[in-house]
Image 1 (cartoon, rainbow, N blue to C red):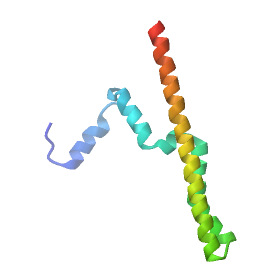
Image 2: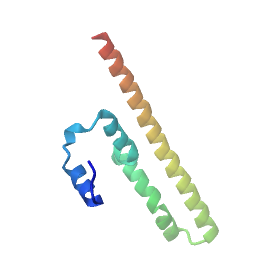
Image 3: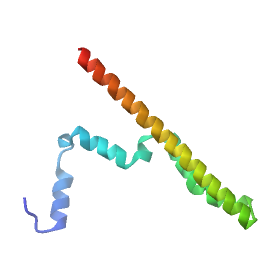
Image 4: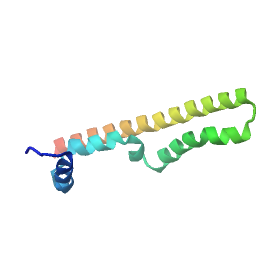
Amino acid sequence: MYHSSHTERLKEQAYRSHEDHSEAHKHHQAFCKSHTSMGAVAHWIRTAGILAPLIIGEFIKDPDKKWRAVRIATVATTLISEGLYTNKVRHDRQRSCEQELASGID
């Protein structure tokens, strides 16, 4: 259907039922906001990474030491976050394989 304005397209999209979303669409949404799909631990790690420069700046006054601490904190929170995400993907794949095997046996 052709719409004369962008707002009409948005209204139509807003009124669509939630039942017509495919499984692939749901998976796509979870991936787009992966930090929210991993739970509270990932949220707190991400928050710690964001707040680390502020907290480090309050405790370390020497600019060279402060910059080094901020870099280390950034790398550490990134590695932890990526590790959690990798673990989640591994777990989801394993669960998917188990479900496929179970549905194949029935």
